[in-house]
Amino acid sequence: MEHIIQQFSLERGSLEIEYMEQYFEEFRERKTAVEIMQRLRGREHLILLSMGSTPEDPEHSVPVAFKVGHELRPLEHEPQLHDLTERLADCLDLRERRVFYSWIGGTRKQWRGQGHYRALTEQQEEWAHRNAYDELVVKTKNHFYGMRATLDHLHFDVLKFERNSQNNGDSKVYMHKRLNPEVIRKHLTLRMVVEAA
Ligand SMILES: CC(C)(COP(=O)(O)OP(=O)(O)OC[C@H]1O[C@@H](n2cnc3c(N)ncnc32)[C@H](O)[C@@H]1OP(=O)(O)O)[C@@H](O)C(=O)NCCC(=O)NCCS
Image 1 (cartoon, rainbow, N blue to C red):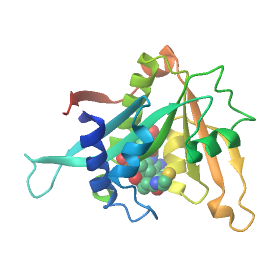
Image 2 (image 1 turned 60 degrees about the vertical axis):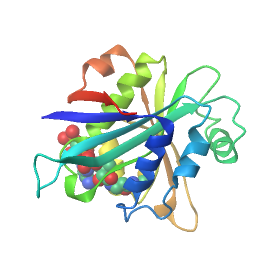
Image 3 (image 1 turned 90 degrees about the vertical axis):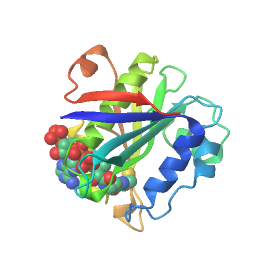
Image 4 (image 1 turned 135 degrees about the vertical axis):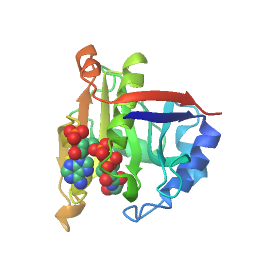
């Protein structure tokens, strides 16, 4: 199966992601387009959506999965990113390595298990490698079993585990994947990438 992936500009992409997130009951706080733009503006980023057909009309395709990532700098001033880099300071040297942060993503329920997230992840990896990033970093929580299992299948390694003493399910799990030509060569999905406005 060839995956059709759309790569979006900041403004349109942020609106698309805001719209997509409505479909995810797993997300406690959904991101608004304004928040997404605030995070991504002025930093290198990548907004990808994977298209899938609807059972009602197989000829018609709609966005069914998304993935958004951005660069992580050694000196972050934005409070959430500053906090992230502080928490990872003991295991990630951002002055030594160029890191792409795989920020948010998911696949709508009806389209899960069809390789959309693998396709988006592999596309993100290819793009990040082409743009001279050394590794991807992603954050999840202990109780997001599906996401943890998926990251396992996609060969992300555990970078750090940060226990939440009140609720272990809420413990943070940081994962990463080093990028190199071998990783890119081993990609499994067939993808066509279209630049959306
Ligand atoms: C996790 C999620 C993104 C997977 O999306 P998907 O499009 O169904 O994933 P894919 O079909 O591309 O699967 C990728 C790989 O992960 C595996 N996988 C996917 N979901 C899995 C699950 N629930 N349990 C075990 N493995 C799983 C697949 O078998 C596949 O492995 P393979 O390519 O080696 O065969 C999707 O279930 C989702 O959006 N979940 C909600 C999001 C979420 O929990 N977010 C938490 C915040 S981090």
